Image: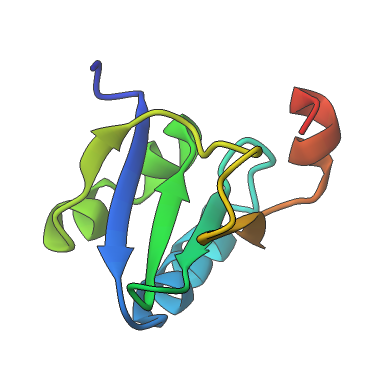
Amino acid sequence: MPPWSWKKVTRNDWVLMDEFMEIWAQAGWPIDAALFGTRNLRARVTYFYFTPAAALIAADLLEQYGAVPSDPPDFAQSALLVHPFLLVGDVRILDKNGW
């Protein structure tokens, strides 16, 4: 996948979200840069999904946390996962992309 693709990080804590929030604010709160999450209740982990724009502004952070290329989160997931939710970002991204 190209470097401007979605990225995913799997964690069992929320530190990454706080760190990205600071980066997003410093970048001027860009609408296309957003962080989504899904929660695997059985495994007790959170999958953090960075939009391509978010991956660009947080490249160093994603390298630090071992992000991998990913498809966008699936908004029609199985019962084991809590559906994707916007963690950090402008809610207008949802309407803009039909989510």
